[in-house]
Length: 367
Ligand code: NPQ
Ligand code: MG
Image (cartoon, rainbow, N blue to C red; front, side, top):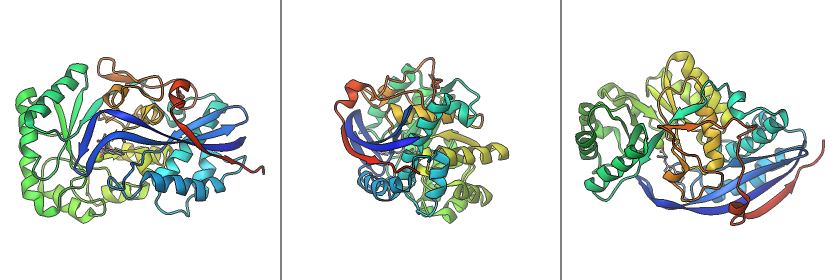
């Protein structure tokens, strides 16, 4: 039985600035939702950034949406499943829905004493770990940074690209680390379909995929681009639900999907997208949103499903944070272990939570 919902806010510095085609981040602003029950409580992490640049969602907006619309839908007998059903009339706002859903799911799975991995249908106990490398100040910096990650054991490298900083990055990394390196690029929607011939130059480098080359709503552009280039097109920002995933695959706008639970409204929807892709033999991988240990733990459970055949962006905690909110996730021979305790399997460390603020406690009415 759910008793109250707490909102927790805070900030953790990144170990180094993370630059993408849409901006540079030096720290992670955080919103956690805590579902407090009679026996157990559960945590969810909101993946929205401070600014609406990765997508239209942003953190302050999520705080307001969660407070004003989502929490009032909850009753003492609410479950993650009943919450998602009741939140259906609310358009968009996937990241807000996802963090509330995760908190409820963590709480109820702890009550049921099963792990999120088991609940979702995981078949792996550890997952291969890739790393997302931000845009660097020079090619030398890029090659050195990639080399450091490879020395740590990451098995796949993703380079962030943008117009004016793309082909030569891939060429330099291929030249230094060879043709066997699992390599892919992510444009975060920075190109237009008019850049198709330019992007076709990437075909020479045997990339695993190019992620989200064009704007989120440019499905037509992605269809055209996917026909013109040989590098597989993978969608990230465009895939906001099971329905958009099915449409993108039916129309051949992409041949690979990056699944991010925050972007699609939660783990239940993420599982549906996984199942669709698994059935069709479409490769998927788990994306990352600079999550701290709460979100990272839950993503590991998802990435342990059988359809996640490509290494994802779930890196060790140390890739982003000197100190994580939870016990840090570490890289072991290129893998990260999937939590196997009940629920998401982790909780915030009390000494870390001291630096956070509980900004709201909302009582849940009995029914
Ligand atoms: C991506 N993530 O795959 C995203 C982009 C991204 C690991 O490359 C704050 C909130 C900062 C969300 C930076 C990776 C972010 C963010 C990057 C998302 O496209
Ligand atoms: Mg991406």
